Length: 392
Ligand code: GLY
Image 1 (cartoon, protein in one colour):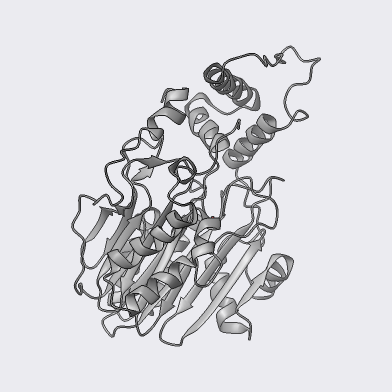
Image 2 (tube, rainbow, N blue to C red):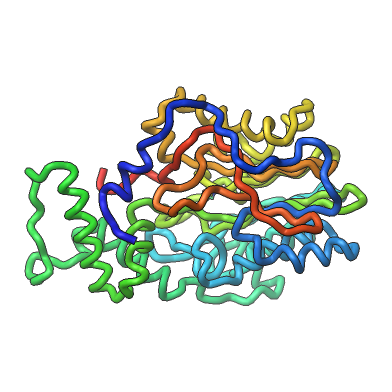
């Protein structure tokens, strides 16, 4: 992949103004679907088969959803969740998760948890073994150890080096000092476009100094300039109509220690109502918290909106929060995964996909006997950045 200002900025700004509602290519169910069914974020795709057989064989709906999300939590190469997740600005991985069990109408959540990989299971342990709903930080970690969860180092070499690159890019003290031959005098009079080119050149050099291999440099630089949020949500529905959901994440890369996004917030990152359905989110956590996205969607379902419309209406609340200003909204993205109690489902997103992610669109993973990925239906045509770019 060639790194350039065009890759990072111009292409994603070329957003069609033709429509506020851009239909995706895949038809999605709006009337009841097949049961059992599991829907998840695309990074759950590889784990759907095992969870689906478990669910079809009579397994519990939340246990099935937890089987899916544990896959990325255990995968060191998924930098948005669990082991290998991007760390906070101090280089420490902090994880968030929540789970809701429809049949028993119970919930558990954990936030800002360090050293424990499977925070989805930890949120379930809070649900099952405490009289609380949410534990955070050190208390959540101590509870995990008491419950038998192993403490482990979650920072992989890949994520550590990307964090070092982020530190070097943002701090006068972590990059080469003025006595280093690598030091370059900033040129204050450079035009904005040239500054981008030279900034990317600088990051390439820093990445080489840090030991990031050439094949991983473009991805590392992208993650430094546009900190990703990642995350996985999964909802599962069995033949009896029981439904559950869970969401787990390492949150926004390079966040301030202690920052919680939407994922551990019941009603934002996930919401399940046994009478209605389940919804979950990935994307810009701060924006989703402000519209209580998952809860809003389930309430829209309750009022009779079909899943797609229920999700799009929540996305339009995010658009409304910025008065439709696309100069700002290009740095926001949300994907909602929606499963109604009769098996109807939808995947909706603010944009069609992330810029600089090739042609890969936002997708929802579905298993109802047939495993597949489907494009989401987006509010805007075009692609977003995940977060305001650096340099400002
Ligand atoms: N949606 C994940 C986060 O913002 O933390």
